[in-house]
Length: 247
Image (cartoon, rainbow, N blue to C red; front, side):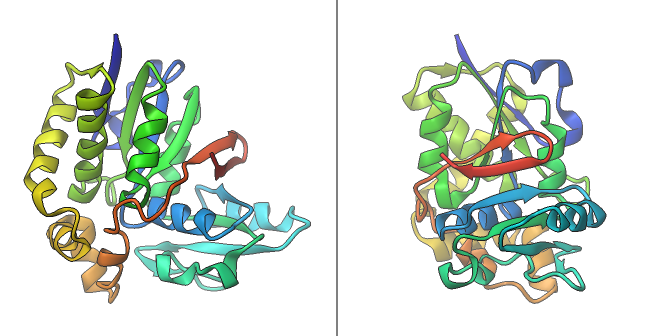
């Protein structure tokens, strides 16, 4: 039996279940959307770091071109090259460069699944590509990054979208209440989700969405709501450090 489950927060992961599973890290607002955008625009790879100090250390060890990127509290980090808005990662800025990234929630969620057999990141931007990749696995865990340790609705929506596709189209099953709740949440948004403006309205209601509006990044809500604008899967190719490249 192929199974899919959802961890509504990294702290809810059952660590013993990671060894044989494909872990999918979801941080719609905004780390996994930025990762998809950066790699889609030709970045050489993304090094995900838990801390600012680790990001500086990893950047100092690189011999090629890189961009030091990320946020704390949603805002760009002083001294870094780029923040955490997809708008900052066009091809002319990021192509052939390594992205060294640290964020409040997303990169920490990646660290939480370090022992998983396989790790990828998902966003609405690469929903179909991520779902298709997961369909080849026997055990999929969708990990919602959350916002400052609290469940965040936008991550739950995407987890529900992926879980529904796996169950409905690829023979997966679930007995996981969190997965069923995520699917129910997605089904409320699904009728309008093809329109980025309308999906963005759902995202605006979430904790993460409210935070972005408060700090002046409301435009990012539509940027992350463009379903299937990217067609690749950011996949972990190294554990320590955690490096993601296109699959």
